[in-house]
Amino acid sequence: MAAIRRAIGLMSGTSMDGIDVALIETDGGIKVRRGPSDFVPYETAFRRQIEVGLEHAKSIQTKDQRPGALSAVEKELTKRHGDAVLRFLSHHKISKETVDIIGFHGQTVLHRPLNGLTVQLGDGRMLAEMTGVPVVYDMRANDMVHGGQGAPLVPAYHQALAARVPAELSKGKPVVFVNIGGISNITIISKNGDPIAFDTGPGNTLIDQWVSDKAGIAYDAGGSIASEGQVIANVVSRYLAKPFFDLKPPKSLDRNDFTLADLGDLELADGARTLVRVTADAILKANAYAPEKPSLWIICGGGRKNATIMADLAEGATNTKAKVVVAEDLGFDGDSMEAEAWAYLAVRALDGLPLTWPTTTGCDAPVSGGVLVRPT
Image 1 (spheres, rainbow, N blue to C red):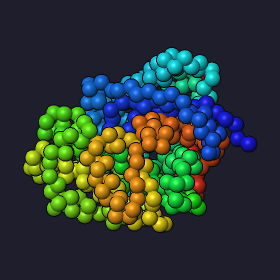
Image 2 (cartoon, helix red, strand yellow; image 1 turned 60 degrees about the horizontal axis):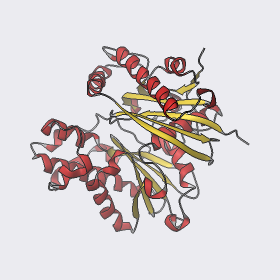
Image 3 (tube, rainbow, N blue to C red; image 1 turned 180 degrees about the horizontal axis):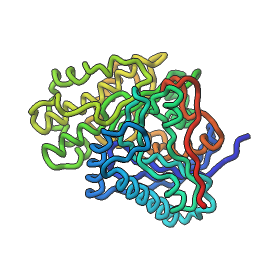
């Protein structure tokens, strides 16, 4: 029987808004005890540094290259993660000696799955030295060595959580976990077989970029701007006609694969409303790849706080008589779930258990991964 380990997960997603920190105790299987979680926001100036780094990252040809400002950004990013862990331990009165492992995602700055290249900034050794806790990092690379797309990795954790969904809600049919971050991704979990997972399309990134460019606002809080606009149907159609949507899963995206170019010169609210519909319709298109129509859609990530996205999802799901809920409705935490997943994956990595499957990333066979470093 696998040992129960105490793990901290760290996640900084494509929204680049900060660091999610979460603690769980798990055997890397279906035994999961969720602990406390925190969020540490990035200051605006550092977000701008990452954005500059994203431009420099476009010239990367091998995963270890750090052109331009990237080396400095990586060091600063790792320092912020280390500080976040130390504050988390202090705040929750947790001794570092009781923590077995840290799962460190880092910050994705480039993801080119067709080229077998994915780059996450983050110095695992530096983090281990700062915190005094062993670290597993670079968990996407081995999947790509084995023919996978390196994303998404959260499905392993979704599968563990799906075991907790009440039977009266699952009704024996597939359950779908939807994470709406900068990019949206889903995991389809059936009673039999490995999870099916893939990126569905834009999440919050385009909406955030739109309101930032048009109004100097970081994001559309609650979807209030979008709620005042109209859906411009021909623009939605233009987005959904992109070649990405004709690809069969597994498939994954870089945050720059979709841009605002197709919006044209729409008014602020109409642009936000139209992008919301793009996000929701792209997610619902995933129905086509489920072995049978799902009964339940569980929405996680920042996008669940956008009431306009949630309304569009709920309306679209009625076509298949499915129910749409937020993670909290089932006792989960939609903010910390990805950080929890990275803690969970670190434990699986320690035991050599699969992090990905052919049905989640397209790898040749179920494969583990990650690089383990211990403090000296």
